[in-house]
Structure formats: structure tokens, C-alpha cells
Length: 113
Length: 114
Image (cartoon, rainbow over all chains, first blue to last red):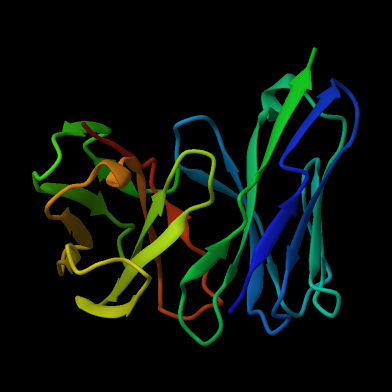
């Protein structure tokens, strides 16, 4: 059974610092890994999707890496801003060819001005 | 903006009642999945529908049921509500049913059971 872990559970940084968020998974036979952002009480916004054949994916200030063999993904957010404050979740499809996502519990990020 | 909408935004129900939550997927997306997210936790998979048939189910009791309609809308029904059913309910749509498809989430429905 796939298990997804995110460490740390919470993170507070001053504005301008780079953010590093970690995600680990137990079953390396994944189709892809998706990073989401969630604002308090809101739905999930997809940030990046990394296919299993890729090692990284970039969008603006966001960069996500994927190391299947070690069961890890890292989300980097450069030059953090107060607007980056949110909870960040990673998710992988549960084994097989269908789309059930297994989520981590998330990392709550606060960027202070 | 994902094109996935959910209604209502918030809902308050009493223990033992029944509730129906609604989701409208992106046009052309044949798969809809429903998730329950308790406070401070990641979303938990409830079930998935592909072309109006249930395509998989998580560890939820039968009082959680669903329907998917040909017009890309779907429903989540919960009978005999319990206090622990209080959560954010999310639906997600994707084009096919492959694990490789990106899933697009709606804004969620906040259900409070008193």
C-alpha cells in the first residue's frame, strides 16, 4: 500500500528566502507525482505534475524534482513571498492504472513580510 | 480556474440526516473522483466514476454513494450523517481513468454535522 509522507508539517520563513518542501513515497512504481497548493478552507490548485520519466519540472519560481529510486520529490520555491503562504500537498496515483490519488498530509507554509 | 465547480459551498446538517453534494466536471472529462478532507489532513479517496460506472472505492462505508451523469455532472450522497463526516468534500475530474492523467479539483463543499 502506497504511503506518502511530507516533512516538515509546518514551516515559517522570512520573505525572500527559498522554500524547500519534501515528499516521500513508499512504492516507487508511480505514474507521476503532483504538487498542489491549498489555501485555508479552499480546494486544491495544481502546481506541477511530474511524469515518472521526468526528473524535474519547472514553472516560474517553482521547481519540482523527482527521484523514483529513492522515493522522493522536492518542491523548491524561489524568493518566497507572503502570497506563497498556504498548505502544499503532494500526491501520487495508487498502484495500477486508475486515478486514485494518495496524498501526504501537507506542509503548512507561512512567509512573513 | 480549473473549470470544475461544486455546490453548495457550505452546508450544515444534523446527525442522522442525509446530504447530496454536487460537482460539475470539465467538459470532455469522463472521470470524476470524490475525496474527503478532514481538518489538518490530506484528502482521502472516497470513490471514482468513469462514464457513469463506479471504477473504484476507498475505505468508506456504503452510506457514501455516488452518481455520475452523461452531462459531466455528478453527486455524492451521504446517508445517516455522523459527526465525523464533518469535512471538506472535494471532487476532481480527469479526461480518462489512467493514473497518468492530471486531476483537476473543484473548490470543495464544507460540510458541518452537528
